[in-house]
Image (cartoon, rainbow, N blue to C red; front, side, top):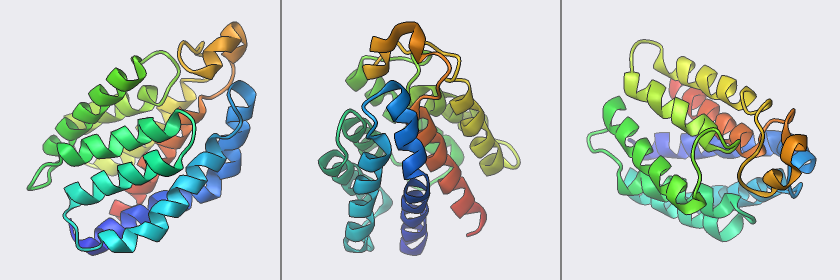
Amino acid sequence: MTPTLQAKLIAAMAETIFVHAEELTELDRAIGDGDHGLNMERGFRHVLEASPQWHDKPSAETLKALGTALIMKVGGASGPLYGTLFMSLGKAWPEPLDAAGLAAALASAIAAIEKLGKSEPGQKTMLDVLVPVQEALARGGEGLSARLARCAAEAAERTVPMRAIKGRASFLGERSIGHMDPGARSASLLVAAICGALDTD
C-alpha cells in the first residue's frame, strides 16, 4: 500500500467518525455511557494529527501506531477494543496485500478482540459487524468493496433486535432491545469509509 493510500484511508475513517460522532453518542446514550461518539472523535482527531509522522512507515507499522493512538485517546471499552483491532491487523498484515491475506489478518484481529472482551458474535457488539464482514471478505468475488460496505450496514441493523450480553448495555437486559449497538455502528461506518476510499483510489 502506498503512503498516499494509507493517508487517504486514515482521513476517510477520521472524517466519517467526525460526521457521525453525534449519532454514535445518541446511540450510546440509549444503552450505554453516552460517550462513544465523543470518545471516537477524540481518538481519530489524534490519529489524524499524528498520521503525518507515519507517512513513510510500512502499512503494518502504521496500523500498530494507529491502534496505539486509539488505546491512548479513546476512553471506555472502545479504546482498547479498537486499538486491539488495528494493532492485531498490523501484526498479521499480509505482504503482498491481497483479499485472502487481509481476510486472514482480520480473522486474527477478531480473535484478539474476542479474547480481550471475552465476547463472541451475537452479544450485540462490534463483533456482530466485524465477523460477517470478515466472512464476506474471505469469500471474495466481484464488487467486493460495495458488498462489504452493505454487509457492514446490514449487520449493524441486525443488532437492533438483539439483547445485549456484554458491556454496559447488558445491565439494561430486555431494555437493550430495540437500539442499534453503537460499537457495531462505528465499525460499520469505518468499513464503509475504507471501502469508499478504495473505490475512489
